[in-house]
Length: 250
Image 1 (tube, rainbow, N blue to C red):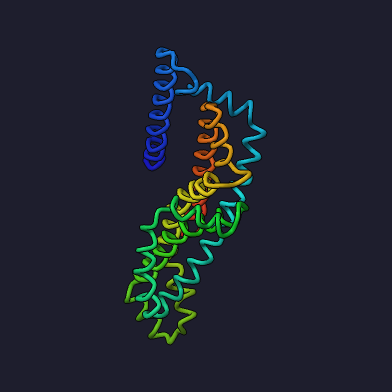
Image 2: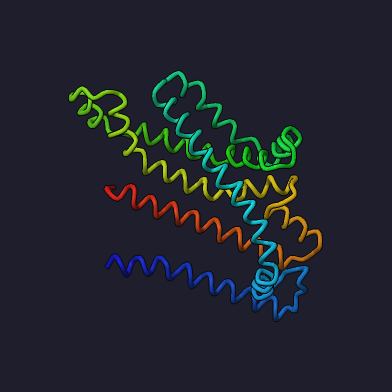
């Protein structure tokens, strides 16, 4: 029964995607739309195959920036999340600021970072950290808060130290929330890197998209978008796989 349910969950989105791609190809073909207006799925795949080497090189740079920024986001979220859980004054001081910080448009702060830190990978990494850090940190803090009070009282009754309570109770309990935050951050990760590359850079999938857009080679732009989607989906599935292996007891 569970296997059939899992097949249904996979079958419907795949079927919907196939129908959407078919309709897209049909509209472009019957409408005789020029490639600089809307390339067809076949044009997109051909562009990806023909320019694969160049796209792969740019995508590698974006992937490097994304993974490094994502790792720094996780480390920073853990440190701040633990501090906010351990010290009430830290949470009261920083939590509202974190919420307000998310109202700042990413595309507005990116040019400032480029002016301050140049056109290298540092501004892109900082943008990724700014975007990904928030959902991870907030999810982790919420997970710490949701620990059952009875469990905490049980640990106190056994005279467990704060470190023992954190390692054996709070951290495992918060893992589900933590991985939920990771999934959200993973969907923003590549996007944040590309926004940084749009604003200024010499290499990256965002730089490639700007160059091909300016040349009206929309088939290559769509090919780049396809690569971005594939990378993002792979990251989400990887996090989902790690989640199931790590929190199987849930």
